[in-house]
Length: 149
Image (cartoon, rainbow, N blue to C red; front, side, top):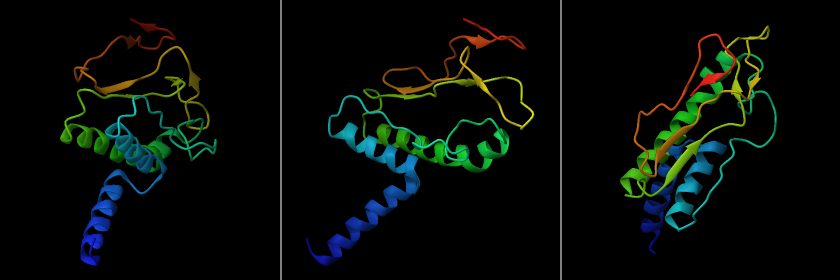
């Protein structure tokens, strides 16, 4: 490949990596997309591995500030780019994307402006794989501990 061709290729790779976000989650989802394209049938992506309060979704304190400033912007960028890329490549309908955590969060905010673990009810996002967008299955009862299905 001539030098100019390598530079164009490198610029395209960098642009793609930047679209997903230059962070662990963004680059992990980019790798996941590439694995799907290569035929890998099951891929698990973790958003950070260590348990530092600003490094993951375990929001026992400063929940709303962390969501706004640290957690949601890179997640929104990376997941929306993944869905767009899978769709543009014609493989979204045959690829199920599942986004979930190990716990939901209490409806009540604690004394540290956080929300504690709540295994009785939490959200899951599904995209692709033939799932119809906008569907809601079950919902939390207002001011109660258990969900209504």
